[in-house]
Image 1 (tube, rainbow, N blue to C red):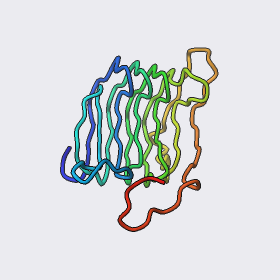
Image 2: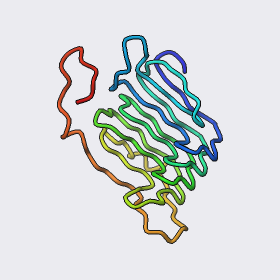
Image 3: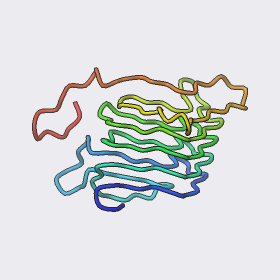
Length: 169
């Protein structure tokens, strides 16, 4: 954690039992003395208040749930990661309050072993996959039908929070 940016880079995460990497942004509330950020790496937590999150050049293998899970991040960069064999989604960008999401150069293999899961799922945000020199790659060798990219915009179900209110509706 550095300043107003969280950087999770060059890690090997395996056999996590839950999400391999999990970062939650500031659209939830846990009390006046608890910062609005939680990041876990193999279930270890750090605290801060991120303006942006960079998840880059990580190897995530055999997560018990999602390989990389983020929620309500204002500015998110997910680049050049290798995510394999996650039981849930390979990447799950969850929540109704995501902002700009850069999504480039990642490889997802054999993620999503439960019905309805995907190699990469996005619930909101402006998803940027425009760099054709760094495409994302999706590989399925399991024989189990799987979705590569899933876009399910849930932001329409949420209203803007009143000024100063940090509780989700």
